[in-house]
Each structure stands twice: as C-alpha cells, then as structure tokens.
Image (cartoon, rainbow, N blue to C red; front, side):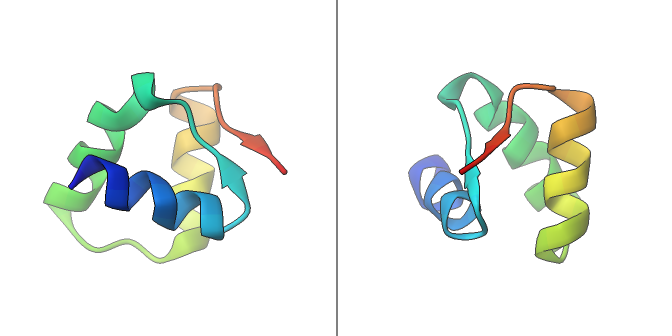
Length: 52
C-alpha cells in the first residue's frame, strides 16, 4: 500500500523518499486529505519532499 501512496504523491508533483512513508500512512489512516494539504503537511513535517 505504501508504494501506491508514494506513486500518488509523485503524480501530484512530488518526489517522496521512502523514509517518510510512515508519515504518509499516518495521514491516510486519519482521513483522506486533498493533494495540496497532504503535500503541505509533508513539506513542513518531514522537510524531505521536493517538487519535481
């Protein structure tokens, strides 16, 4: 499931490291978030996502 979520984020214009996959799982487990807030959370919490 993690791979699918990473692919989703890459399609949204992000290159996401596998090391933050647990954060992706936390966000998706809580509630389905729209792409922009999800990207915003990742950039600020992890600081490891980079736009293509």
